[in-house]
Figure 1 (cartoon, helix red, strand yellow):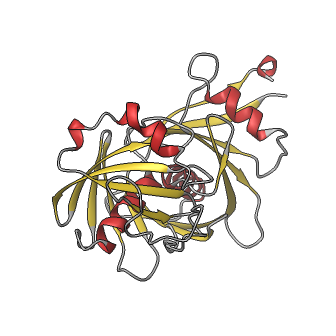
Figure 2 (cartoon, one colour):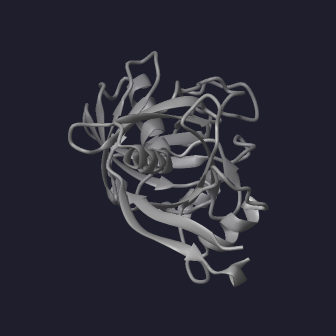
Length: 269
């Protein structure tokens, strides 16, 4: 079999979209590992697969490049929404993910907004290994934790440039408090509506950006009383805007760009 795909990025956070609305693709975890290899595959941070859906424009499922599945990816959701809106020449779509039905729309500036669902703060929802205060975790430097469908741990630092993310990120990702591991954020507050964010991504490494991590970092800053809604989140690859009123769904707004489309050779499988 051959397989068509689209390679896209959102502020350098790269991902591949596969349209499986009219076909079945077996062994998606293995496919993610093979395609995600930056030397022998296509290379990406996440793989997103579109499937047919009865109560939304499409269902969307996600995998990391190491083959592990995840419930949410803000960057790839924006990319999939962009593809579907261009395909049908419409300004909004609804995507079904494990986070529920997410409304996506094109803004007046051409960026894509996604309603990412409500953040979850319960220790069992994140999940954590035991019941603790998720606003101030009982580990060094008392980070905050939240789930956006995947676990996030946010450290607030004076100077994010001084943090060796690649060196300390893996240890924090696998802290015993996080039985499913965690994404790790290092946040420098520039002002009450602007943060600088660097990330260690669960199952990935150090990306140029991340939609769900941008949401988690902004939400944790707002609940700590350090930030006001909305928040401009500046990552290594560019900026997004996160909106959260403290109660409802988190809205992520940012750009996406198509890089190229291709077909995997039959021998790839």
